[in-house]
Amino acid sequence: MADSDATIIDRFWSRVRETPDRTAIMYKADGKYHSVSWRDHGKTVESLSAALIKHGLQPDDKVGILSGNRQHWTWADLAILSARGVTVPVYPTLGAEEVSYVLEHSDVTAVFVENARQLEKISTPSSTNPGKLKLVVIMDGAPSNAEPLLEIKSWDDFLKEGADCLSEIGDQVRQRRENIDPESVATIVYTSGTTGLPKGVMLLHRNIYSVLGAMSDMVDFNEDDLALSFLPLAHVYERVGGQFLSTYLGIPFAYAESMEQVANNLQEVRPTFLNAVPRFYEKVYARVQGQIRQMPPAQQGFVRWAIALGKRATKQKMEAKHDTSILDQLYKAELRIADRLVFRKIRERFGGRLRMMTSGAAPLANDVHIFFEALGMPIVEGYGLTETSAPLCVNKPSDNHFKTVGRPLAGVEVKLNPDGELLVKGPNVFKGYYKNEEATAAAFEDGWFKTGDIARIDEQGYITITDRKKDIIITAGGKHVAPQFIENLFKDEPLINHVIAYGDRRKYITGLITLNPDGLKSFAASKSLSYKDIKELCQNPTVRKEIERVVHDKNQNLARFQRIKKFVILDKELTIEDNDLTPTLKVKRKVVTEKYRKELDELYEAEDLEAQETAEVDA
Image (cartoon, rainbow, N blue to C red):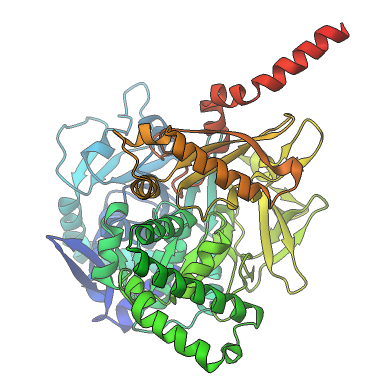
């Protein structure tokens, strides 16, 4: 367990002192990955921290970071915290209006921005509305226009300024980082949310450090481990479970260039540890299935045999609680053949060294989970919220219970209230929402944090999340339907990206469906379909018939009132940019259903017409 009086900054500076020559972070520039030692890592953080203090940063002042994942993000974060400031992460995918809201509401006095494009999103102070923002540091490029009420500095100039003043204020810089109160606020993280204005979640240094200690006790990490990061650092999942956990453990933390380059970066960096969300695994699964479909029949048959064999072995090991002795010698010999000729080749696409991957932010389809386990790439599911400093429960690699999100971390208590909502207590639970006492009070029930998620807890303490409380559909017949349960059935379908179940106060359930372009192209090739573009292919009758078949098959796993009776296939994907998805790729249900209200209403036109005619007859 972690020392309750320590902070991640204490841990960081211990790494700098104790392992100065080992690799701390890795980033790609000029076509290759570069390693930064803990010594140089510390020098950069110290210089930035000194520059912030020189520019007037006081303890508990707020500093924003508006950038995608890169080494500068980590340096800025650690420098802010070392200066006893409060980091306010801002998603680079947000628009100018949302960025302005977060920066103004959080009272930031300074902000690190990635480039000129992000700088444009920041509202310029004026004489009538000066605001608290006084300093901007731009990571890439140089300031273009002088602002009378806003100082804008380049990264290099700011870094040099800090290094130059260390001889003058070095003692003050060191005193700041050595006197951090674990009960002080470390960060204010604004929840992206699916509706309404974001709320600023205040996490204490103690909250974060308690999670790191509990997580490190669950996994046997060693000095050969290496993490690759591609989820947004502005999200607490990757920041705590990636950046801070790597610092806590002292293992290298590498940055992917972008989501589009993750596949290449996996082979370049060859990580052993990876955080991801279900959509990442589902897309990989769909891509592999599409590639198999295009293989010659003999090869296709062999690969399908190997994968089926691996899945069967995985299910048997799960039932036997991971005891491999149940597999007979012939079975093991077949598995070795499957591994050498099929599984190993797929693992090599991920660098060949992955021994632990995590999945969070949404449920992982069971078939997808079993598929990766069969390949020898184990995934552990966890669950948490921004308000719980990321994970509050997680499966252990050595005791991985599929279809659950594991048991609570050490020190975390859970229970269910009468309507099945999961309640949480523990050292990881946030202090409250910044400048929002009403929302803070509403978030707790007799000292327990209300997660907003409906759950089950089995006799061994393993937790299963069934749905968001606010998303539960109540049909016109009074039936309660969990949309996530329906939607999860489709996550292993190569043709389908998203299914959004709908039907509140309606007679039956309908759905919005988006298709996977890669899976769609593979299907079109297998059926010799001609098409101009993906949009046209989405409306192809053969594709429609295949989706009807899939929906029919999945409906057999559902009670009659849960089944999707009608659906519409959308001809475009849901994206973060169009405000359809959160930064961790969760569907903004209310936003999407409102956007496609016309299409959904048309699915009920016959029902509405029938109701109208009945009313006229009764009249």
